[in-house]
Length: 230
Length: 241
Image (cartoon, rainbow over all chains, first blue to last red; front, side):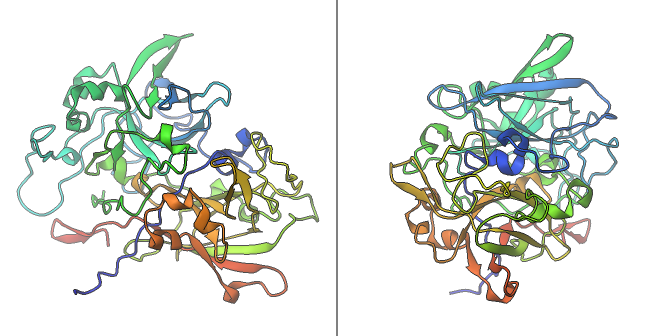
């Protein structure tokens, strides 16, 4: 026997269930209760950068849309800065960088409006010692990369919950018009199977003068989206 | 920026994606392994909420949807506790959201058609922000059990859904709070997605007679633990403490 480390253990996850909207988006459940619901405006009116829409559908292993899913988005602004007290500079007034989106209950289609995020600077290397030289992108055959300390291509982080999803799924949206940055992105390069990387890249088009990125999420089966343990 | 990351999530503490006795998980569970990431700035940061985002009444589910002078029907309860991290430190100023069925087991949702009646004075959701000690509370009615079609005769134990943010997107968590003494807990296929009895027990709120409001409301205590953060030597000083 050894000493007890005295850490607490994380509370286990449970599914958000089919009625997640009551708690997190009551208007969609069919009633009006709060002064304001959270998460409907990601960028705010003052954010610099290109205004975009990201939309898609979540598809289950049978090929059908998941109509009761809820997605949260977390992103940096166009300068690559997160709205967080530890960030080294401020973001635009009203830019929260976080949003919540639900589907159309009949079709499963979802979408949110925001600004396109900028590239995100690497985390400083922890510990003392000389300036760190990053390992090769993607690392060796034991996955010994150092992706946390390299600059990242523009991306939006997503967290997906629904009935039947026991613990929220994390993934990232990258952009197909950022091919050069994507090719150097340490997280995309960490995905050993190159044919799975495109599951994280949204396709740009224009509709009625608006920039729209399509990002379908496949929970299972052919072209299953890459999900991360963060 | 403090650059310390959060402790790796203990995936053996959480339900796996595929749990065939909870049937809906079968077609909604990824089959490929998750790709494990070192945390970048994208994972270490997360949204921040303040008291201007919510109203004081939001954590009182007995009254926050009731007509003036009326209140929700059911057993009046307090659900209270602390949000802590794995280091045992309070997580202050974090948003906690809750939602639940009414005392009859009916949700106020356009896609719930269970025959138990809607309570006109009960919405079924609340939210609050933890204080400097990580403390939160909700006042509500005890939710009812209700049937659902998994196997034909499955009944959900009384439960309140809880959504918690912490300070980092990597701490984001949704869970469910059950109530001490409920015989349906041990029979529930959703509860049993959790691999350990210790993990299940950690989701069961304890009857807390010390926190009751005498002659008004009974109380249950439900503490929530989020991922802890490393303390790491950086430029010769400790970060994350």
